[in-house]
Length: 319
Image (cartoon, rainbow, N blue to C red; front, top):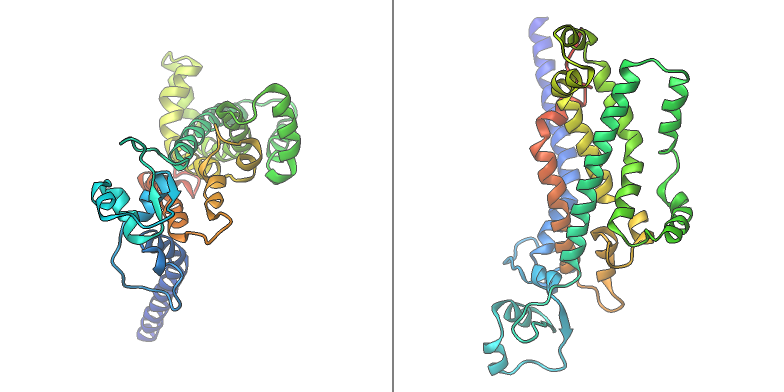
């Protein structure tokens, strides 16, 4: 009987491993497609059947990050020889040239949009996690009238999709001059992530025994000292997990960034689709922009992966 159970358990383990591998392949297939397309020559991006084996090149990234102008005719050998190496890459693969302008490299709009995404996402994440942690600590440690109603009110701010409130927010922002500004999007993303941060951090702080703080208070610590020296270190896992989710939400947000910005504070999500254009789209440029856009989230999540895995169980501290 034991041998039969052992055999069945091994069979179930193999089935589970195969299932996990299949699901992993399904989820990673789009990522592979984007990454491979971002290194393909333009003429191989839309081949049927897809080209799997090819010689990678970086010309899509050159065309993404540098300004281009349409060529009327092929460059002469002298012009080709005098061109910088990045222009020769584009000459070799297509009909467009990188416009350097008197020896100075002119960047396209993508680098500035990418920097805008970093500034807005990082700042809003820090603010949302910081304010959410303080608010969650207050709800967790102090009793107040209508506590559940306040928590429900905070949660209700996430019940409407962004597109529903985008037009009213646009009108209000235009009235106060916050359209197309970094501050405007930071305030918006912070408010949008704050409810999520409060609810998630409250779950983590509830797991921390109050006796830890009481012992610190007996030792002469003030309430704030006990919070910073006792609660925050114990809640580090929750803070990291909350920061990852808030950063992903702010980094990927599209509707507000599309409506609230035009150029100065525009982020990468609404800018990447604009590269399709009205003519034949260059899918390698779009794929390279998407690939670069994926990197910060992937790196940030990878660095905090241990905290994130522990945080999914709302902490490991028990009384």
